Length: 235
Image (cartoon, rainbow, N blue to C red; front, side, top):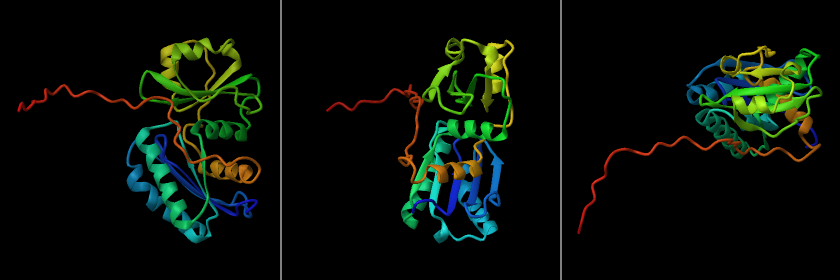
């Protein structure tokens, strides 16, 4: 298969659940749905997939490739999307592709034709900890860094000219509250758009090494040690 015809794309890695069925021959005529939610993706994803497939008049057997975000994002939500994509890929015998949440949000910004007078795009994703998931892109959309987990002061150290940077993502409010200053923020790129994910998969398919459906973890899981004193049985 040189280029996939129909693509099933979905995201549950951030604070939402979204699905699209993209038909490469139909272009922008794409069935899709997005619901913001902090939790509940496990119960909502599969029914939403079926609803969007029905709306598109498409059966599972007609899907050519399955696309999911691979992180960074919320651990539980991320695993829901990945496990669903892996299960569908195995059950249907279809290829799978993984895209990072950071690259998808950056692509959304560039497709909207946002502000042009900036040198660096900074994508910030909420970790609900002290740090942020972030990645830098130039004004042409090319990555300037790898995805990272950095605290606010570390991000500021890597930005030589804050006035020439533009910030997007779902962590803007917290970042601004920590840093203050006159930073340039653009709202509207908080959740990955599955339609854009599908188009990205079509562009990548067959032209370069397929992006694997493997989780991208930028920080270790938070594990607390139990304070309960365990009894030891002596023989």
